[in-house]
Length: 305
Image (spheres, one colour):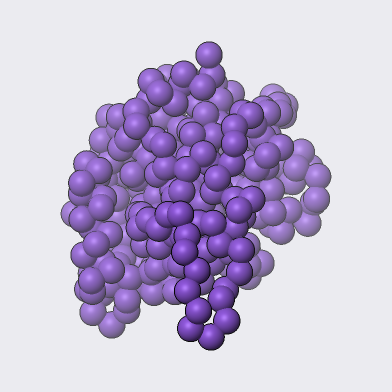
């Protein structure tokens, strides 16, 4: 069964541990530096592939060395990247992340070609032919905020495709724009800060209820070390985070989405799918980068035993 990831594609360069930026031209020796496919579409695509899914990824990247590297990484992971369009006037979106010893992740970020993605990049019929479509970061790929694209999503859902959505930013203006997608998705997975900013409700349960009223059937609010909240019309349930040693939180949300979607494609209900997401996020948190530690589905589910 095929999952389409559609949205933000980013190349991450990560280093750890970093306690501060050195003065002048001083050098600090670190333990580890990695380059990964990241972003709410690309990072989720790699995680989905490692969990055993067939994945097609759609997005916009630059016609540059960063884009070549991103394509190489995703292709090596088994992701079908024929849906990536190359832009000559914009660079591939990229981030530099100096990871603190406690796992915190400040970033230096170039939005790049993500901002140019439009609905015409989506091959006709692709969403309706998929088991699931994951909208990864429509807050930064706001060219998809188009009635024609919403009609594509409606046709896909009518054909049986499940539509999930995650966000990338915490900028109020961008989050307000992303709210237009809510009537067109089945499952929405914001983090706690995003849910609060979109609703004005600091309490996750109240925020989730407000988001449910805008259209999705399920709202899963991820809360970092406090676990997650799964809300449907039947009520809200808290799931605890798994007790692991956190190295880096980069990509934990993407991994959660990948585990959640994988659970759905295996016929699990939303609570069990959220448990799969929790385990995938816990796996990634134990290493550097958005794909850290993910090997296969069995290894992830072993954390739940």
